[in-house]
Image (tube, rainbow, N blue to C red; front, side, top):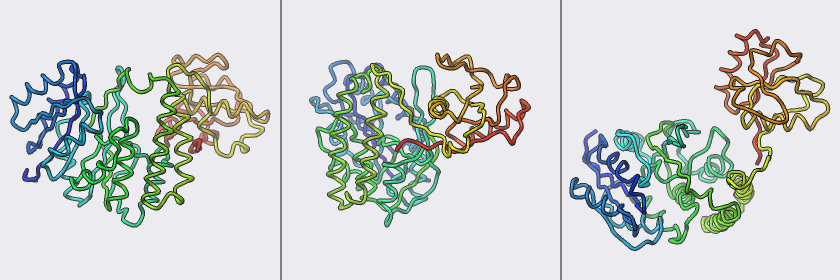
Length: 390
């Protein structure tokens, strides 16, 4: 692939002096060189703007916009006005990207003749790194299936068919993102990426999903979750109203009303549960066909989120009895209501079935193999895809 195609990369910057240099360097060092790098200093009061200027002097591909603080949406729109590339990417100034990100995404864009490419990302929180790519790779021709795609991958997405809303995990054709991003209200301070994605789905025909991650999203402790549950709930309500209004504009609000309501209910629950000042035990995962376990003594494998929810569910039924709860990382879990033991202790307990309480089949298969290695009869081991609260 030659480098005749120009990619414009827009980076909003606001008071992130400790992060911005690493971000800029990760863009400068891309293996694809034909870039226009637009740094939008949105009224920073620290040294972020000066750092941008220093790198503009070092690299002729960099252009810097200094403006009064107007918020993320206005900063991105300012970058779009200056963009000259046929393709547009976004990077937040406190994150960074892998060197081959734009080379490979542009290659995918051209080979598959799509309107935008969506990839996974790596979430870095403290010392842990988690891959977020909950979908299968492939070209999705949604010309006549926009509503179905929106329902299946956004509003009612299952754990294995879920697109991140992030604008920065994607590469867009310029005309598409320019048209769609102008629809986002300037004052939108929560869910602006979700709105953009919804607009792009309605305005495009072909999408390429790539189950690979190049983008490093840095989780910061000064994020939205520290605002308290009420402000976040109110912002979620405002976003719901905005989404509903836009669906009406696309004349599909009736078809998607139920899906949008489910999305709203679930996000209210998830946002409240994520607040640092709220501690609620609310079940979200359910074992399907729980009646098939009636009258059985149960060994429960898995003490994470799914395992806790299964335990709560099973304890509601007098017909079910959890005789032992195990996890390979038993020492990690200290619950007041039930002890967790290592699976090598299973032979000491009496049970009829061993229920694997995890969400992904690939992990369940690996656990099943390990349990068989421990001497557990294969016929006793059961995994079913958990049902998720909707």
